[in-house]
Length: 256
Ligand SMILES: Nc1ncnc2c1ncn2[C@@H]1O[C@H](COP(=O)(O)OP(=O)(O)OP(=O)(O)O)[C@@H](O)[C@H]1O
Image (cartoon, rainbow, N blue to C red; front, top):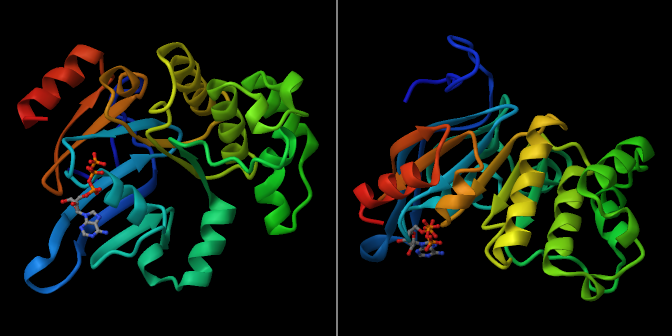
């Protein structure tokens, strides 16, 4: 795959700078005879201002790739780059700061703090970083995510879809360069899942963010601009402007 990533459609010939990329990224879990090569010299780039889904059979390395790119796990060799920053050169403290200041995360299990109301959950990353909220940005996010009437509610008083919208707002609050979403619709019914996907698309289209999402769901993946397929720790292919049928077909070819 060539770097940087070429825009698949809409702007022929244009090239977008990658927000995040893997260069020869290799990850071994464990050591010795029992070591598992979860990623094998992966080269892949995720363009800024784009929504990319990562798919592949169970065990193909999706979570490992995202964890290495997000500074949640360390690579065995190769490089994981956020903009020009090589994560593999950073120590734990630097990685913690980088995650807090430059990345956003959305997980399947929402991961909201139960004792805080929605507003406090959204603002938590800024509080941890000792930063003042930008009230105009906060208002814009709340408006786009349509959670203005839920800000005083605790997570237990919100539906799953509302909780995930709060989690997306929390991921957006520090204007991250990249939002990593790991199965963000996995715990939601199809309607709430569709709303969360629409919000992730809106985060890209209207708020200018970059989203990288791991999913098993071909319909969810078809919300993205591009699908990257993994198999056995390799990039096995990609689909631009995916439809659910194209994604299902691609997975079938991989035996997923
Ligand atoms: N901590 C670990 N220790 C040992 N092996 C691991 C560890 N984490 C992952 N693996 C192995 O690495 C390979 C890739 O795992 P990974 O979780 O990245 O795949 P995945 O595509 O995200 O899978 P799934 O879709 O099932 O979540 C698998 O063979 C897995 O068993």
